Length: 410
Image (tube, rainbow, N blue to C red; front, side, top):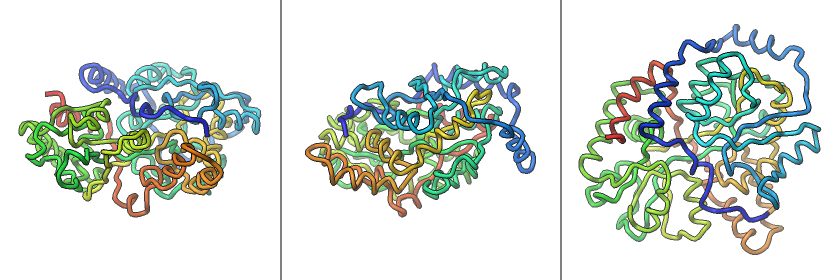
């Protein structure tokens, strides 16, 4: 396994909160009438049958992806899993690392798609949450033909076949996932952190980091206070916002982060922080021995980046073949060995074990760490304590933003 850069990953490129993101959010909220809303029930089944009738394989797929989010070869532009796909199928994949923020990508392609024009991309990788909901609600995604998803049906973990944001995987299949939990500096915190509410401890005043966004911050609070965010409404949202505001007003929060929290946590500038599981795994592998990641006893958020087919797709059958390719355990393992997030294919662990047995030196140690890490392969108990972002309609989103944005923008 060739070496990969540690400490710089897909989550480093998450959208920025604040005025820029807020402006994009408001612009996006204004497009509610520009897309044909997705059908349901028998109407949806008819739409699927009508769309896929007569569709055939082409020789190309254009894939919009986040940076540093796939296996790489000797050259950074080489991706062995894609090369193998092309060799097997004859389909050339044009791979574009053009998604650095969900909101910015949405703003880029939505006007074109809503106008019934090709965006230049067939497949895109979209995080569940606000912008996945927008793509779906505005009718900008193509419903999938599951007859092409035989590997998905066989190898995908059950947790990825029953999501709240896309029941039945009508419009998406997972690419990779991660957990939003808590990380703390073990040399600074006197007692182990086990609860989300430990981040309100007065002993941590001025030493806590929280995420400054409208998904991880509010959803983590909702999980801690009420359980599944899907079962909450504006009354619960206001209570969660009040709890988070009290934490800020007490001076406990040093900073609301979009990125960069790992360095501050490792150095001791902050002692505890909301954290993404993949970031902590990579930090530990690069020598940060003083960090520990925990799933709060109340539960944590499981986010998922999803492969979707964009409307006006020029190569839908080939796109479906590409999606299903990554559900083979061997191919899923190749990706997991590089990106170090949660693979939706549990059987990949056996492939990585085999690779570890054949490896030597630092590669062997890294592969063994991946195999044994619940940050890459969560246990069944872990999954039972994980929840998805609250699915929001455009109308609900406006209420949600008015409640939560003042917490971290004040």
